[in-house]
Image (tube, rainbow, N blue to C red):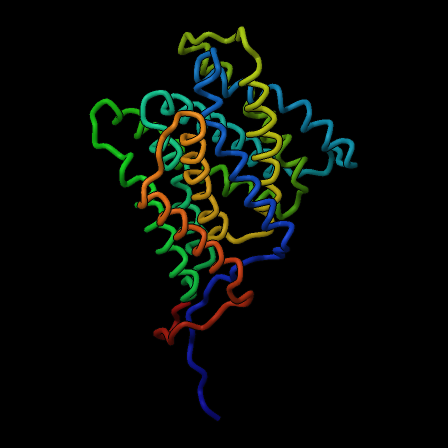
Length: 311
């Protein structure tokens, strides 16, 4: 009888993923990419636009959750607290990101605001006490290379953009915490109830934040705010929370890089910003990374032998 070698655990590519779920993940990021443009179109303050995004969407989400048969009973105290905390984190994420959007370039705001691309997969591997598989590691490297190319021409180490870049980076960190909380909530809750409760918990903090900054709250033109509520919160976050329950943090993190690609397309169509070769190559690398994690092995692979006791 030969002794077995301890092996390093690895994280499976997906958990219960289907083609529809993958389409939802892609659709979520396409919808969310319109957020920065709509924030710039709004005639309220940046944090106030985040408040209206949440306040207009919250009643719709609550109705959808109740019509689906969910009732606010039977939830443990820890789950209530986690959903409330996720809502506060999301409010802080939106507030800092919307402030940053007006203080830096659109490309920088989109990329830094989605820095969960890196943070969320790292959390997934640490939480699982696992190493990435070869295909996962290759996908993450390709995605990061693509991200570097996507901001290659637009990124500027400019003091005028430093405050906005830091605010968007802070938003990306808060977005990661929000993702972690919502991914845990999705273990026991359906998408609409989880998103509805988290969204409701975001309303008051955003309103207080906007008021404290002295921002203009009431708009003259409701169109951009209705667009934010519908496209970003109901469609974008709705599809994202659904996908969080079905994909690993790595897949979700890499898929976030769809947003800078779509933002670049919006810049081309709306503002006439031309795409260069680095932009196109970066987008292609992100697409290849998504294919690698989508079609990779569904079961954990053994990478290499580890010392005794390693996991």
